[in-house]
Every structure is written in C-alpha cells, then in structure tokens.
Amino acid sequence: MNILLINTHLPYPGWSEGKLNASAQAAAREFFEGRGDNVAETHVASGYDAAEEEKKFLAADAIIVHMPANWFSAPWIWKKYVDEVFNVGLHNGSFLTGDGRTRSDPSKPYGSGGLMAPRRVLVCSTWNAPREAFDAPANPVFRGLSLDSALAEITAPFRFCGFKVLPGFAFLDIFKNPNIADDLAAYRAHLAAQFA
Image (cartoon, rainbow, N blue to C red; front, side, top):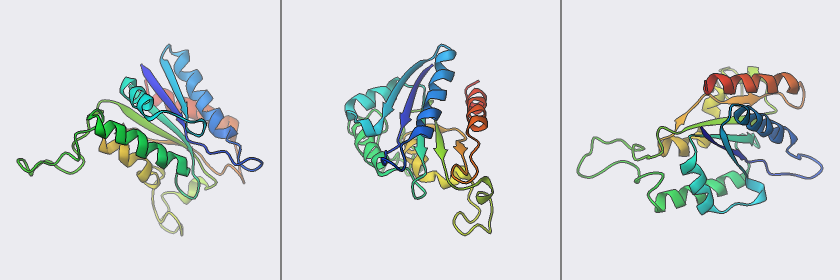
C-alpha cells in the first residue's frame, strides 16, 4: 500500500511543541513501514507545494491525518492546506468533478462527484477532552456528539472527494490524565484493525 501521513500541528514554542502528534505520526510510519508499505509524509507547518501534495494524494491508497484539536478543530494551517491542495484537485479534475449534480440528471445527489474512491482516510486527533465528554447528551459542549461526529468538518472534504472515512482514533485527556504509552499501543492496534 501507499500511505500518506499528514501532521497538521502548528507549533507554539514554549507551550505546544507538537511532540504527541509527532509521536503518533512516528508510530504510524513505523507500523506501515514494518509491513512493507510505502510511506510519504507532509508536515504542514514545514511548508508544502500544493501541486506536489495533489500528486501524493493521487498516489496514496490511504491518508492518515494527525491533528491536535485546537479549539475543537484542526489548526488554521490545516484549513489553508485543504483550500490550496483540494482546489488544485478540483481545478485539475483529479479529486472530483464538481459536486456531482447535473442538470441532465437531477437524481445525482450533492457530494457525489468525488473521484478518490477507493482511497481511505483516518483522522488521529489529540484532545484535552476526556472520553466521557463524547456520546454524552448532557455534555455542555458536545451534546451527545461522537468523536467522529465532532470531527465532521475535518472529514467532510474527504467525503466530498469520494474517500471512505475510517473510524478515527484519539488521544484523550492528554493534560489532566495522560496515558501516552498505552494510547500509542492502542493506536497501533487501531491501525492494524483498520488496515488488516
């Protein structure tokens, strides 16, 4: 398989250096390379060329996005990356053929124009939120949302382009109750289950 690993962490020196997302990406790299897969990587904060990223997307069988949940979404550099890279894929007609609808066939639904199937995407995120904050209707922030639902704005561009979105993985409660070694082991097991 060809795997693209994307690290979306935006460093804040002296406060948020990105070590956990880098460790998660390293664990994924070791997992896939250990199986003999080809691994390409992008660290968004280090810079990128949108046309080269389009090529990486097209060469990939699966993409793993590593992201910290900064104010309940990915860092702003991720949105910039998506705007630039996905626009190249739209302009070149490589990621999608518009939104899928046509005047000649009104039965085609919005979002059915993606060309990236059967590629898959998985989001690995890091959160201050504890596990019990998700799937809990009484939680004042998530109000019953699952982890995957809370990341819908991250996965929607991939769905729009035809990717299959796999169940995500999260490192939770990383400030008040971290269990990083066990979480890294669980992440490797999650990758093994999703990419069996």
